[in-house]
Length: 117
Image 1 (tube, rainbow, N blue to C red):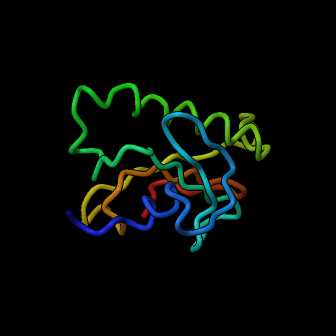
Image 2 (cartoon, rainbow, N blue to C red):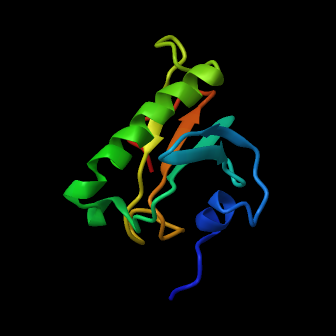
């Protein structure tokens, strides 16, 4: 059995984190290295290593991540279209993945340029 990811340890309450949201599918908490004034990670409780490895049975979990993003954005006051937010999912080294556990970055609180990266 491989070692737990930092996200699994947060989900299992082995590492403390202020949870901004929790439901049957996921948890959300602030990123410890924020890239915007609002930077939240939304992490599925089920270990899915990366988005490109999700399977059909993960459909409900994947949908729950996006719905949770809307809930968190509302809670943090960035859901309105005059404010707004960006969702990012990294896959693999060149995609910027740093933890092999699927997670959605919710970024907001400043104008986010395009193209990213």
